[in-house]
Every structure is written in C-alpha cells, then in structure tokens.
Length: 496
Ligand code: MSP
Image (cartoon, rainbow, N blue to C red):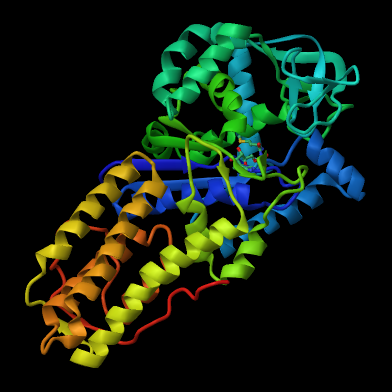
C-alpha cells in the first residue's frame, strides 16, 4: 500500500451543538481523508469531543446534571450531525474513553519521570470559555477589569497550587521544527514572533480538585485534576493507537495532519510539540491551519450571535452534498472568509445547479433521445479532452497542496468548457453525435471521479444514471468502452 495518511480535527467542546464553523473544519478533513483513501493510502480519520474541564463542569451544574450524562448526550448529538454531513471518520474519540484516560496518565508519568513536571504555585487571569490563562498585554481592559479578548467576558482571578510543565526547555527545538511543520508557513512565523516577544514560560497543567473535579486526576496526586488542554491534545496519540496498537501508530504517526482553526494554533504548536518532545515522540507531519468563517466581520460563534447552523443549510439545500460543497468552495487556509446565505446560494446555483447539474441533465437526455442511451467509444474529441486533462492535473496538484477549493474550481472550469462544447458542437443537429456525446460522458465521468470526495452522493447518483463505476480520477479520457445511459437525473435543484 503506497503511504499512509492520518488526519485529525480538533476535538470539539460538547457544551453546545456544532455550527457551520465546526463543520468547515470537519468537512475539510473529511475531503482530505476521502481523497487519500481513493488514492489507495492507508487512511485514518479521527474526530471527537473534548469532554473534561471547567467549561463542561459548569454547563452541567447549570443544567443540574452530572457532566458525564451531559457529554454522553452531546457526543450523540455531534455524531448525528456528522452522519448527516456524511463524515467518514474512522473513530469518534471522546476524552472520557478508557483508553484515552489510560494514555493521559501514562504520558504524565513519563514526563514526570523525565523531569519535565514540577510542583509550584500559580496565579493569573483565566477565561473559562477558552479554558486558558491570559497574561497582561493579551487581555483587554474594560472599566479597569481584565476581559477575555475573544469572548469579551470578565476573566477570573486564580491563585492556587499547581503542577507545571517545563515548556521553557523546548525553545531551541521549537524554533527549528516550527517552520517545516506548520502549514501555511506564515502561521509558524506568527508563533515565532510571539515567542520572540514574550519568551516561553512554564505552563500550569493541573487544577486543584476542589475547583475542577471533572477531569483526569494527576496519577501521583489525585488532589489535582489534569488541565483540559493537556488532556485533549493527547487524543491524537490515543487515536493513532500509541498504547494499544503500536504497529498502526508507527505507520500513521509520521503522516499525521492536524487540521485546526487559527484560534488554537499556540496549543497545537508550542504546547503540543513540546509535550511530544518530552515523550520522545517526533512532531506531527503537519499542523494545517485555516482562517475563520466570519459573518458581518465577526468570527462566527455562539456568543457573537451571528451563527449559521448546520440544520439551516441542510434544510435549505436538502442534501448533505450541497452543504459540503458550499463550505469547501469558500474554504481558505490563509484568510478569514465572510459568508452569508446569499453567498452560499449563489455558489450552489452557479456551480452545482447551472454547471454540473445542467451538464449531466443535458448530456444524459441527449444520449437517451438520440442514441437510445447506448454510447460507444469511437474516439475522443481533442477539443474537450485537453481541458479535462489540465483540470485533472490541477485537481491533483491542488489536493497535494491541501487546497480543496482550488481543486474544486479546476473541475468546475472543465465542466463549464463541457457546457460550452455542447453549445458549439450542437449534438442534436448531428446525424450521429456519438463522438461528441462519448467525449462529454467521459468528461462527466472524470469530473464525478474527482468530485466524489466532496459530493459523494451526487457522484454516485451520476455514475448510476450514466452507467459507470466511480474510480480514482486518472489522466486520459477514453477508458470506458461504452455507456448505457439509464436516466437523466436532476442532481441539484436551483434555490431561490
Ligand atoms: N476543544 C478545543 C480543541 C481541542 S483539540 C485538542 C476547542 N474546541 S471548540 O469546540 O472551541 O472548536 C474549535 C474549532 O472549531 C476551531 O479550531 C475551528 O477548527 C472550529 N471553528 C469554530 N468556529 C469557527 C469559525 N467561525 N470558523 C472556522 N472554524 C471555526 O477549541
């Protein structure tokens, strides 16, 4: 088997249901996973929920329930959303899973044995929504009080005994490895700049049990609970099978791709890479960072009140493919993307309904009317073949660069050429339009093979209607001997 691919999403806090910001990350990782499976790589896709910590403890208290009851219910909610979006994860990990708790305890013991953990006192300003301490200069001051710059809520003053992790030991190696492990690379420069400015201070990795009891106890001192981020980051090792399936871990880990939003970059680079080094495990292949979905200029989020929910889009487009497509079409690793229902509708209508849907409908109708559905290979018309070839090349090179949006646009451009080719060649006027229709069917087949990682249902429906089997997109048209077109589907209905 050529190569392996291990892709992860952040594990989400299950204090609220996911919105399209979470779907943005999850669908993207899904497309990468589907692409690598299609190319024959051993692929493992991990997603899940981050279930411990003060945020969940408080959410449960407010609801008058035990946190475990709450997270059990919410893990089910996440799974249902991901099923509705056809997310093909291999494991849904929960930080309350027994193999994960075992791994966290093992990791803490290992780090302590190697001298990277010590006891001390901590004081600082904490944001429960971020589950994070803020230093002076990072927080905002509103009416003389420190506020979280993200949630714009007052921070809490914390002063207590804690265990520290010796982050300061890892500065040299971080400077070396960050540029080659963070993608796009300028996010690495951003982090290096922050290290230059602020230096690296040791981090607190536990909370006293009387304040935060909902979490994994520090194995040698159960009066302390493991800090939720320390616990959460380790999920990537549990998921790869470090303690339970060493062979799988050895194959997957060098191919690990952590997809994250830019909000959690510091944790996934500075903290995570240092934790790994303390465990003598190499860093992941790449941390793949994307910008935010914003709405009216602000990061989309529950607290901002500008959120578009997954069910809004599912109800609107009626198919998971529509939702997956519009999210991936706007996907951007470098920039925040301002989205609205109007923008999504215009993408859906022009790409899916007018371009792809229309082409499949026209070609299948012509094949049935003019040739009784039977279209043989009597040569491929070079005029369209070149455009499809170029599109496939660009599709693959974009996927290799992890640029899903560009990959999609390359195929859409070829489909537009195909629509123009029908208008030019007018197969309905020809006495025998076999060559034109065969060439068009081949173009559709190549496009469906490429797009199946984004819109799996429509690709399958197209294959059934036109009579071909989905396969990895290969260069070169003319591979299918003949088509038996069965019906002419309306893949996507225009929305208003
Ligand atoms: N539990 C932590 C992650 C631990 S990973 C070891 C966490 N969870 S979260 O529920 O807050 O989800 C954060 C992730 O959701 C972001 O990093 C990002 O991937 C995604 N997004 C949430 N809102 C988003 C937008 N508005 N836009 C794009 N992505 C967004 O942090």
